[in-house]
Length: 372
Image (cartoon, rainbow, N blue to C red; front, side):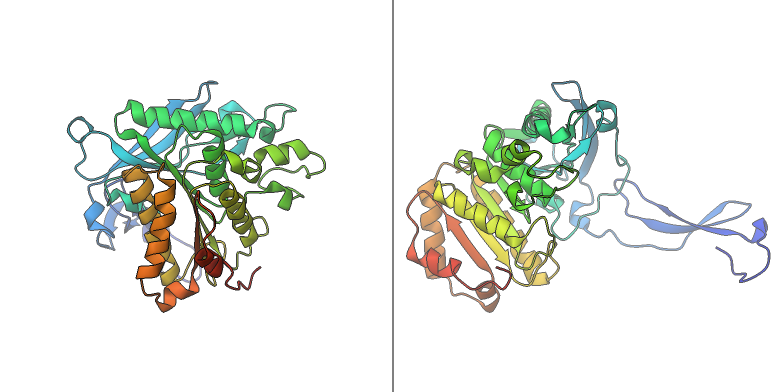
């Protein structure tokens, strides 16, 4: 950076703009003058969330049973001590990735000294609820040589999740019966698959803006280049829609009404919910009006947080995932006893349980949706 607009730049007139941060100090900007290298701080941003200023952050490493090195970032609430406070409810939030070798899959990404930024719908918000958060545990799907990664998708997905769960339990920070799984987009696809194929690991799931039936994306998805007609078995085996009858743990589905991502159209959640409900699963579908693949309106974000918090409290903190009839009854009473506000009236939310479909659910579920 130089005040001189034209001509030669001289080192003794050079100024460099840098940023500094740590896992406890938020980003601040500095000027460095050349050549004396004197550092001058030019910003003094306050901590964006002082209630979580002393949160505990650690980048952890562990190993999958096939030898692949995995990493994750473990966050613990301020003041938490596992030896005196005991294990916490835990939220695992992740997103799978494809690799061509174990070495590439085992590479460390990110920095242990990075300041923990918290977005409007970040899983880290639940640190304020005294959750342990396992953020971004690597879920590598590896296809070495001529092997296609997705041909062993479910096997590797479950192995990675088992390794992550075993690690937080081994450290004594997570209660084995109170571990929830969640993700957005391809992470939602992962969540549904884990509840179908590894129900022993998690008490409930949260899936946002996902795709659950791969036959509806027949010309490829993510890094899968083969078409449905070239790899029909893979498409079917990867689709949690085809395993809806296996999902017995509570799952919350959230989707924008006008999702413009071609791989995650709103009907994916709509049809998956219908399949789950038809098999008696504990499930809830929330459609956010006027929202796309990500959520931007304040009303939508606050509603997502409310739905998620309510779901985690009921099926993770309370660990009442076996109470199928209670979930259905509670939802009906809630609708009967609570006056519907304008914002709620625009949000389509339905719930599925073990009993037959109630007429009130039918009425709510049949509201017109412009995207369908």
